[in-house]
Image (cartoon, rainbow, N blue to C red; front, side, top):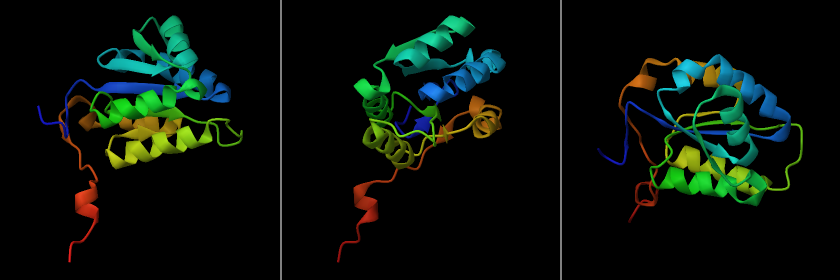
Length: 148
């Protein structure tokens, strides 16, 4: 499979800031059946809470402020995460804000589906593309620089 091709079974990262963890757990419970057909991972407490509350296997990485956002970003760049649901808190300053911004940049750069709220997550999860292969269009340095 091409590194630019998202397979039928997606590798989904689930991330939520503290004030959004309850929303994430409620969303995961509501979508448990759909999520069960995919590989799940997440940052620290979020991954543990989702696994505990839903019974779904969720591979945990470090907490966001301790490097978890960077771990997920690295996995996106390596093709090991190809879908992200990140319920971030737009009203609270985060001590690891540069890491959050870097993670969002990597998701855009590597053209993965990324939901930042429940409505978008619902739309993406129920899309016909969710259970089919999908070609990503990755932005590369070579494509963005014109050579004279």
